Length: 320
Image 1 (cartoon, rainbow, N blue to C red):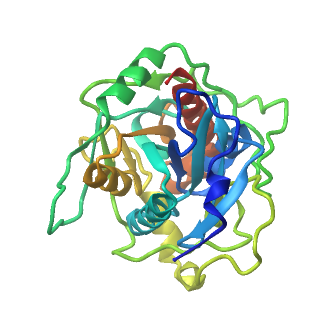
Image 2: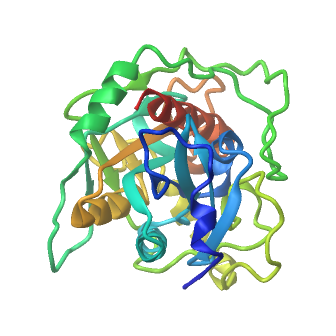
């Protein structure tokens, strides 16, 4: 499940005095494009381990120690990876002060917006507590509310980083969404669903900006990192993946994804402060007016949404 280097790598020397060297924030994303901007912000980052086939790194952001990596796609992988990395951090005597999730989602808001729900639900049957809804941490949510209107989100679509380099070419394309906003509205619900019927979704290396095992821009890793790619042979795999981002798929939810509720449940169980920033990849305000095929908006706008979510996440870490 996990292979890791010495625990000392978890504590870079450049940390603010107010934070003990053995304390920091666990920053999670689901797939490589979502983690690219965050990993770049933490440079130089040091790899600390491989958990559920996903590579994790540590560095500093805004003077705070961060441990960051990918959960993988879907509720099952989000649960497995989060539990594995938390177990390792606990064994390493590393105190997780908060878990912050940064990623993309389908939403009733506009493409490019970043949404911060105040609670999360899922569609699973739980045999033991905690049960949904899972509330985000009130202190972190208050910080996010103060950031609304004060974070510059990018309206321009970048050239897609298909090679997963983590680099963003300038200038951006002329494709522009309406001015994106950080949406922190009390009562907004986030919902996570499992379109895979309880199956884990493996990562592969190299897997590009969607199916890889590390954030785009990560240094080369061990060649055999990755899982069994057999599920990708199933033609329904990608259909299920992209359909899960369809706006409104979560009923009354403001955002719909496939991972956050699993992480929120674990954070609630372990009493770790939690919050999530989800950039809208599928929603209203499509400047290209793409045909109503579920996966098209995701393919075109997921990088813009991921980068805007990361921008908001970085703003939270700086303001905390």
